Image (cartoon, rainbow, N blue to C red; front, side, top):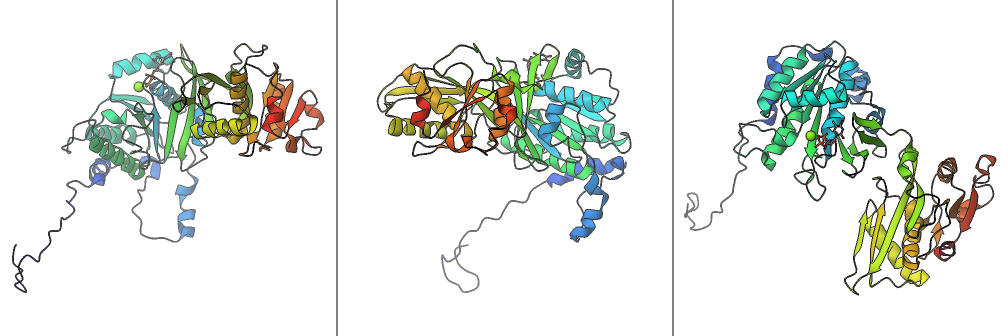
Length: 466
Ligand code: TYD
Ligand code: MG
């Protein structure tokens, strides 16, 4: 309109765009499907449709003490914080071929054997293909395990409502969708596999979980740069995000939580891929993979690393090579790139190393991501050793945080780390001088077999390179 109908002024009106109305309420489809099957799941499937209530009333409701659903796979349960929380939505991400389907099928088998009705929906494989894998994993004998091969969201929720509605009383069921990327909602214009589809399907499945009390586990593929497809798009929608990591060409696999509304994100689960599926690697020592242990190797340093409640001996490796001034490469795998840059600067500044024209590569062996500053000194000695072609004596492990002034600072839980080093046969431990003082705990008799080498500065530590 050029002229205002009220005051008669010309050209005084601005266009304002209205938010287009959502054509379908995301809750509508999943809730409707659910309401159709009039069964009340496990007696306590009351969706969050209450008004405001005092916290005391909420706390006394039976929803509070719903037990967790353990999968029977301890390494997975630990990462989840004791098992699945009924009615929660969990996302499992990882590279293709890393073992997501294998892990979840094994978990489904464990759940079903323990009497939990579990529906495994494959949107990528036929039910027969899933069954062939199940046979390989030895989980074909569980009558509570249901299989479905389907990509349409409406049919998935409909089938889930049907298959899960008569599940054993008192045992909230579990729905596994492998993978959510292949699921589509026909009510949307967007192509199957597009971000719109992905977001909406995921949101509807999360609503389904909340409304029905069914635990929903979603598998998501990771893109080339390591993000769950659709940059972190789905992570906000779900209650817990687990990543399945590891080198596809090595047997070790690590499950880690990057978000968990019901537990810590510090714990990791360790697995090994074998012929019969994933095996739990309970003895963490297996990880140290002391390739060529017993001989001194420049550029390789072992550090006791803590993740959650466990300590692993992790080997940190570094390599330096001739590069170009101003364009030297710094690459790290399994280590924090910023920490690497900082340690290189400290080495130049406080130990007189000239690294500006050296390419530097650093990695942690065995697939455990090392992020804690307690591994600083080990990484620094690996780089210095690689550069000087000098190595620590065999049987020496290193622990310590490095400060910007080149000083070696104390780290937490030193005693647990020292015990792990001693248990795995390490003879000496390079430790921050401040922690080696009498009364700091490291002088207790149970650690008598471990020789302590206290260091105050990185210069003192570098002297240990033979
Ligand atoms: P898969 O679970 O299909 O990976 P994802 O679902 O993450 O894409 O399989 C991972 C790989 O594990 C596959 O390439 C073959 C291998 N594998 C074994 O080594 N042993 C086994 O028992 C199974 C089932 C798979
Ligand atoms: Mg798969």
